[in-house]
Length: 368
Image (tube, rainbow, N blue to C red; front, side):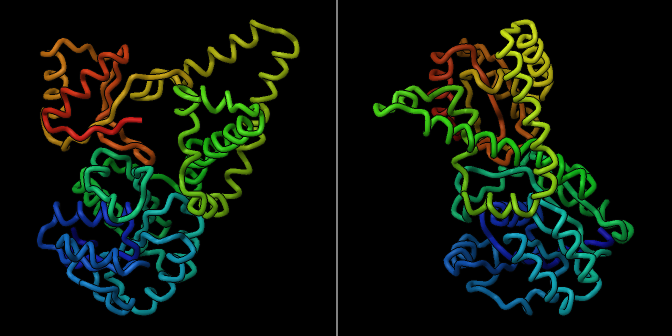
């Protein structure tokens, strides 16, 4: 890699994503020295004890001046503060990237700091419902989409080298523009969070004193509202950072709701059927999950290494024990998913039997 020196890599922030990336880099590049600083000293101590990083206590920013690659894993406003200082203390050979889910602010800051030629935005579409270094795992990056957003003045070869770097971590690189990324994540991640949160609030306010709605809220309701359980402080930051893109999409969602309301008011069954059919056609075209968002699914995610024959090994094990699979595939967008391999079954009995079988054979299962 001509533009990317991986002799020494620095992490500013070492939570779930930072910790997972550090572990993945340690596995892919065992000769690379990794240093890190984090908000909590305990995080740094834990990473040092795991032999992932070389420093046993938090470091001043000046210690990162000679890193070939610096990965910003803190909240956006904190990362921007780091960038201003890094622009002053690092040389032209130091490449800087981030892992944030909103790119507009950080990309603008890179230009303002004079880093646009050696800053390349990143967003691994990976994560878990539980954050922190203690939940980090290099496997969450395997076959996860990893979006790269280069600046207009990105130096020659950097995008190609970062793409190779991402692939070495077993992730799937996708190159997007800043605006394209922020609009896409607003549509498929941020607005759905509003929908999930508002639906939960609607049920909470509409429930009776015996909490019957809460009692029967399982299956589809829990599936569609799961992201409403994510960290409120994290989502506050994301929404304010991506405010314009989210606001641009909300009127369209309101228009869609209005179409359903008008069809119901008119008792127009044909129109309702058309609306449901249109959404079903698009939903069924989405890779992997083909069961519909509001129906209960008999599914499990499991951890497997990205290696030849991994899927065949699992499917053969299940088939040899008479278990039929409805759908099996690799999870690429893993922001709120545990486990890399997603398996769906036709009924709950098969799911339960498969879960016991897979566990007995050493697989780590993630179920909801």
